[in-house]
Image (cartoon, rainbow, N blue to C red; front, side):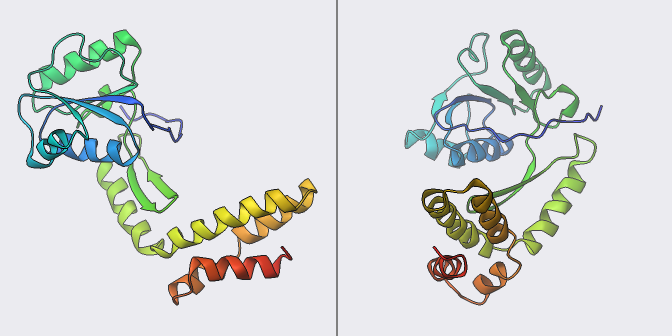
Length: 213
């Protein structure tokens, strides 16, 4: 049943995450976890080629057998992505007993958390969820956003990150800091300048001059 969800972003750097399953779905989930710096344990007797490479390169920990009780202890979150519904349900039940959030692939009604459709542009992350009502709509909206929010936003965030640090260091008045940061962040012409080939460094210098830093 679709639910109203509380949106949040979680720092997984160094966090232990368990993935049960070694197929293509598990591979996608593991890839997303690794991109966020998670420490990933994969429990499966078989692995896709990429998962095997990651295991051989020690990017993930591989437990080369089927899931067993106790495999989830110490995990921050769990993803059940095996091709066996009964196994996935056992994973969900153990995770619930241990108080660990679990995502069950293709079973939104069993999920303690959802993995949204995501658009990434450097530090910018746009996440879309329909609460399990229509993953297909979430994917379509993601495609729309990928077209509207181009790669120039990665450069924009890079410039704005440095500009914010300089404003916080140099501008002492809180109200003035807020005014400058809001004006810079909402500046309508910045993405277009980057699309035309301006570098983040040049954009940063323009912001410094405009706001007198």
